[in-house]
Picture 1 (cartoon, rainbow over the protein chains, first blue to last red):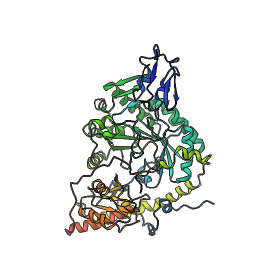
Picture 2 (cartoon, chains in turn purple, green):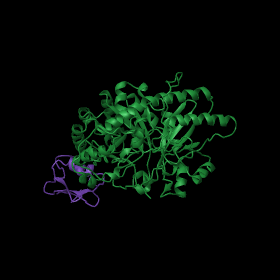
Picture 3 (cartoon, chains in turn blue, yellow):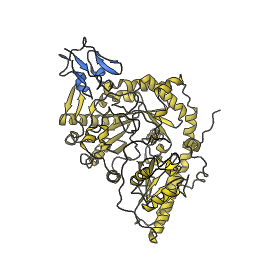
Picture 4 (cartoon, one colour):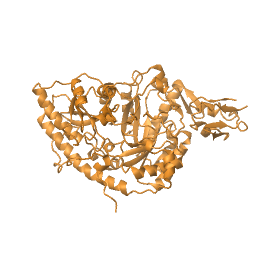
Length: 63
Length: 518
């Protein structure tokens, strides 16, 4: 289970990268991307996936 | 040996009449509380004056002389506002939250040093987004300021924030000597706030509705109090949204004043369906010029009002009212290579302004005293639109003006009350009838327009619209000219030679910041 970022909607603001507790998010080719191997969907860490909660473009979604 | 920079050469006024003869001795008998249109050293503690005198956003007077620069290193945000859509980016647009190029702290530093070399009026570096300067831990913001402070310690540092994360960063702000902070506060009542903020991200979760507005409100008030108790100057920005928070902003004014805010800046909502904002799409309108002015006037006596805000982009460069950001692209900065910071030109310029300032205060007071003596107090104040490119002088051609500064002048004196953005009338040497229409609707509540020069055709159109074009004060100082004009106007009014222009309103132009060029 992991989240992904819809690159076409990403504004490249980086809010998600700063919130991710797993350092799973990095900047790649004009947009941010989630490394599925590192993503936990924040289960056991927070009440909701942090990237999806902070994203202004609502483009962090279940993969 | 550095060249002595003439203020007028910097401001490009060209052939200039001899500036202010020996300033008259400071006038006596000026007892009115409105004495002095822009607050000067007499109106505040010396340590506060030191902080604001060269800051174009915190001092109305300084905005005629000094330039600011925003570096867009903070794209992340932690709240959503109904008037903001940060996806939208258009180089013809001038409004907060919008930016063409996002910079890393390293790029920002290079850009600042490059701009400082070319614009000696530069006195302030601000971080205003394009998101929130303190979101994402404020990392890029503080990294930039840390490097900048070492390289160019004489530049003032300034940041703006929505306040949500502010209480967490007040100590860092104080440690970096950031002595100007702007907080955008649109409400002090969460019931109203829920119509402005659909959600916030706080304490690892997204909050909506009343809960979101309540948390935001509490964090804003706490942050404001923490800053002012440390002696950091706080400006509060409020977006005036007719029907939602317009009357409520008087309560906001009181609330922020009681918590020590230095300035309150009430700005008109920028709303257009093309921007894709919630308010744009729902047809929420912005205020008219007179609605904005009426609210600002009603707030007088509370927290001091800022009326010269241009709602700059998060990457704006230059004097307020101009944006030279497009001259300093990342590509160009990179091509410049290593730039050394040389303070000489800036220091010379600041000394020049300092010298000019003393004379200006005295001259204004004298001109004002004369009006108080000669004009009856029953004459209603009038508005005058002024074409200027800085230096407190009437030094712009009507056709070249991208904005007009608005002065209110009456028996109690002359004061700056706002500005109106317009389409440039003259492009490539010929007049543009559509643009003239935009100018007329933008200054429709004014009695006269002061210009350095104006052509016969627009001059006639202005007269037909009931606005007197005035070029006899070309290159003179604005306030003294306005007072002289008012004396003459009062005389003509008493003789029945002119009629008072009352009950007119004007349109606030929030669209393109005229980037069209011939």
